[in-house]
Structure formats: structure tokens, C-alpha cells
View 1: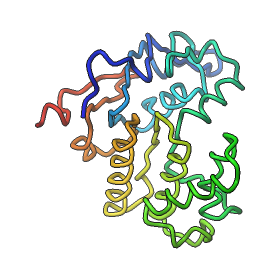
View 2: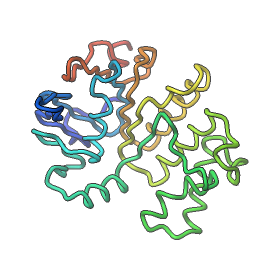
View 3: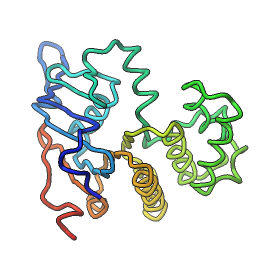
View 4: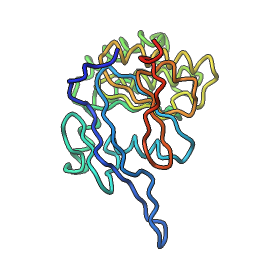
Length: 239
């Protein structure tokens, strides 16, 4: 469901540019990007490889900072925060899902899901209870004591979704979450991600190169020549 038009944005980018030095030249990856994201939105971002999609996620999450412009999350200007403050904000307010899963191989499934909770100061018993509850929701409670290398790709990505949701972040960022999955498994992971996002009134920004995801989105964006363009065809328009 689209958010009320007067609701404050969870994420706001104001005229954001990101450039990198390459020898004697400077290359702009993002140029003059404007964006507002609200709670309750499931937003898809399309674009070719190298178009700046991952760079945009890194700026929104505070992993990187813009060359020019302003990135605000929950009203806080990330450019005005120290690296440690950005790390803390990311740990508390952002859930990140990666194409390569990024599960820690020496931890069990449950331990991987518990990790963000423990980093945020939850005691071990409560963290374990929350982790098992999330694994139940993603259909993997029975694999709680397994190690990641014993799981299929789809199972590992479902664990990654559970881990991203463990600390109930208002913002979920997913970078090509179905890139390593077959079509059926990818659809199952997206069903899960979309459902849990909407249930928790979070905002999800899903980066992909798959146009088939358009039908799921409240809004569809695309990166074109370093600029962010909002497409006309959205779920709301299609209703």
C-alpha cells in the first residue's frame, strides 16, 4: 500500500553526486540524484551492470558518502556523521541482503541470524528466541543448527533475509537478491521479502536487472547514465 503523501520520508537524497578519481580523470557514477523512500513501500531499482545501483545502496546505507549533496536516513544527514556513527545507524536501522548471501561459514544458521541482535546488545537467550522465530517464518527452523555449506542457494538466501530482518530495521536494502538463484527459488525469496517487509511496515529497496519484478513494486526506478528515473508503470498505476 502506498504511504500517505504527507508522511515524512524514511530516506531522502537531495541532489546527490558520487564521483571517483581514475588516474588524472574524475568519473561521475551518480549525478544529481533525488529520491524519497517511505515506510510501507516496496521499491524496485532496475539498471544495467555498472550503472550505479550498488553505489546508490552504499550511499543510502552509509557505507560510503556522497561527493556532493545530502543523504538523510530517519532525518539524519549521513554526511554529518562520523564513520563510527554511520556504522551504528546502519547496524540499528538497516537490513542488507546481498547477492552472494554473505553468511559466516563458521557459524550455524541460527548463529548467523542472531549476530545482528547480539551486536545491538540483545542478551543471548532473547537473541536465540528471536532467531528461531524468524527461521520458523522463513521455513528453516529445522535447519537452525546446520552450517551454511549444508544448505541450498535458496535456503541460504532465506537465512540472509531472516538475518536482515532480525533487528526489525525500518529500511531493507537488497542487492540482486535473486542473482544466484533459479527462477522458482528466486520467486519464493521475493515473496518472502515482500511479505515480511509489508507486515513490518518497513521500506524495501530491491536492486535487480530483472524486469519481471516490476509487477511487485509500488514504485519502479531505473539508473540511466548516472541519473535516477522513476518509471510510469507501477503497481498502483496497474490497479
